[in-house]
Image (cartoon, rainbow, N blue to C red):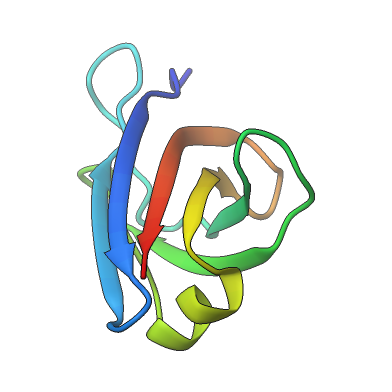
Length: 102
């Protein structure tokens, strides 16, 4: 079973941003090579989903995802809660905070 951890990601409205995080289970492993992953972004601390983007995982548990400058502008400056989950079954893998600056 994977224990969700927390992390803060920072970007600005003026540039595309790519992010990387590592997902681990209790044994320090998580093969996400064939997993369908998504990142859900919603206003912090509560709110409805504002944006969902695809993410890619590998056999080592590394997850890569990103948002464009256009997406950041639509979201607006501020703090957002992010959730990385398996899109096929909704399993929560990671929680974090996205900080979008002007």
